[in-house]
Image 1 (spheres, rainbow, N blue to C red):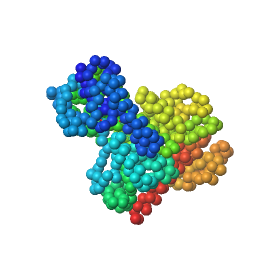
Image 2 (image 1 turned 90 degrees about the horizontal axis):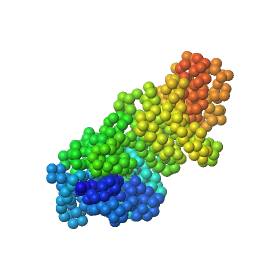
Image 3 (image 1 turned 120 degrees about the vertical axis):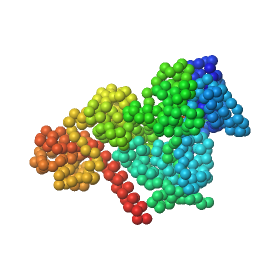
Image 4 (image 1 turned 180 degrees about the vertical axis):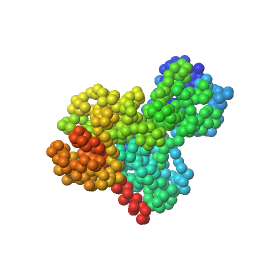
Length: 564
Ligand code: FAD
């Protein structure tokens, strides 16, 4: 059997190695148009910033080692220019000498990845505007950063890669501005969780320009000027364009393979394309999101690698392995914090018309009495009917990865908030608390679903009506001195039972504390004393503060923008 693999990095190299493990006698040729195979594109931002010191460390497997270990004919700098499905032949162009030749196949795997999106804006072809996808891209950025030394960088796009680049360019001493078209970074996060990330970026000296589109680039010999929709111009020595990727589907399209509605290559559960002898994996394919049932693109390394293993098995043995789809679990380090997501967010649930409740909990990353415990914020989204988990978002300093992985595992198994409550975790003070933050998230959700407490989200405060609403702060007077929500009345939790007569019985009562816990206790007292119209502010003052501060900064910046 003769297999041809197109693309030699995440999906391609993984599939090639797996095919060999499954079929010792197969002929396998892996084509890669670039110079390198099996390299760590996820590590590129850290090489630019110097965290990964040696360029060679980016190469996970060298060509010779890979080729010898798996007996694979690796052809780098060879690009497939077309696939003829009727004769089962591919056309190959040798990138170095331009020579064209043909190669036949019995079975073919496409893992051509994605291309960074590059809009056709005036000035976009200036050599100081760069994307981060490959090692050669990285070399260009590295050489520009070395030339401009501690200059000014503008990052267009506030996604995972943009944020990683912001941190790494800061590490090199650059002044960094992020320009993002929507009013938040990391679009997978809900705005309230993104506000924590905004705070971290600002605290680390990154200028955030949100809700602003780039209209043009004006190059001069000295600097490049980035022109924004508001009319503002920012000077830059270097621009990183990271506004997303586009599935690389030209070969598939021209070969007559079906392309899905998202623009990715359509595959079935076995990762087989519309042609029975061609399978496809990675950033280029459209897969099903099992939560919404919708086709989606998930350009992430984990899904690409797992799909490659499944596709390779099916290529060799026939369709015996199903791919269950991806729920889009991702994580990024942004200076000192880590932000992670899994499943779907509010925007998607609203768009799909799926009813949900969301709650926010703030816990310590491990037991508070053991040194080094730091804040960990979890937002979960779930069905009000049966507690089915739709999504989770975790932002914090330590232990974010473990919590998002737990939530992802439960979502992946169609689990509920009740499963979160029951997770049996490994506990000792340096690692967690007897009730882990994910258990806490489950407990709170259980209380909400089962009517033990009613909640409101922080943004309700914007539409607060003091004629009908009573805002009750149950923190201590010392805590209140550090700041309160405007118009709130302070009755510490410990005094509440004695001061019930101060609370109006004809108003909606919104209770809050620092993080939601005492607010819950106060809500229980009030609900059982006849105050049925009582709500707890989910995530407490902490959530309000992050989100409100963020909103204030943005409003202020918006005003300045309009005046300038
Ligand atoms: P790729 O790994 O991109 O491989 C595709 C290869 O196919 C390319 O090398 C291309 O040259 C080759 N090719 C295309 N067309 C042809 C052709 N016609 N002929 C021959 N060769 C061809 N994901 C995460 O989950 N976590 C992260 O932290 C993360 N960080 C990232 C950071 C950066 C800077 C980048 C760029 C990506 C990151 N990703 C991350 C995404 C992850 O790298 C991709 O999802 C994954 O590499 C996709 O695998 P793939 O096989 O589909 O494509």
